[in-house]
Image 1: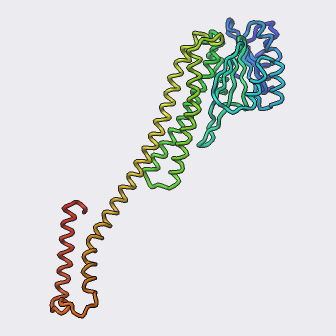
Image 2: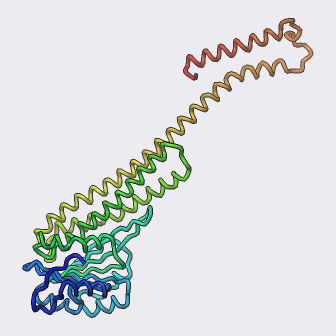
Image 3: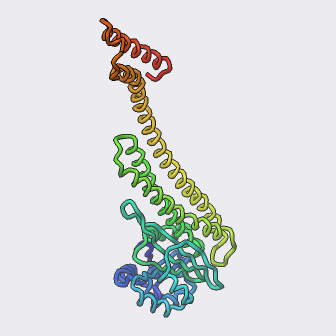
Length: 348
């Protein structure tokens, strides 16, 4: 796991790097990292040494996979770091980004997204930040939390001054997760646009409707993240350093951009559909114009045929030597006159 460093000699709460990696692989239920900000060391330690490390002045990140519900519940009860209702909430409730403040810690619920084909699944991560610990609870391996695991060590060594840097890491990768999902949706919008330009299959309308719904769903996920992030960046808390708050505040602007881009994508999608429907209506109007021309031409001819098809005994024109010729002359004159008139009024 990224984030391993050389242990302090003679410190029981730390293991050699090789043993730490073996421990993480052998016990995926819980992984504990002990941060020493003075010495810039962050070894993985056994879960049983977490409290000793906290008592020794270190900040510990305890990451627990609650997929094994009973084992996770028992372990959290033994740790006794958070209230029982928070544990039950993390085990049973649906993902919904929010924040709750307590005397000894703050509780964040973060909702990440995992792409699954054209759709995305929500991944809940509970982050409880106290004076000497960060406890993260999740089912399986959330995408954005995996990114945190890969990069936190380098940021810890180079930049970290206080435990609040872990809050920055979580939010930084969560927002990157939103950006990646939104990028995938942008590509889908472009694909629908290209489809509407060429030969259109009716399936594209179902795809466009589904995409519009997915974009709205993504916005509903990102919207509460903006509120929580704004509160973290503006409201004073003993668990969020003032040095970290401006960086969290900068992220609010990125979240705003994601929200605006989602709305823009929905507008582009709606515009593409409207343009296609306008093109269809235009083509239909052209066909109707041609049918109108044919109808106008044949209406007077139908009238003449109707008149001379009547069964009256006396129809003077039928006795004319040149009556048939006069009929066709009348037909040609009518057709020519109608065509001239329709061309003048731009029906042709």
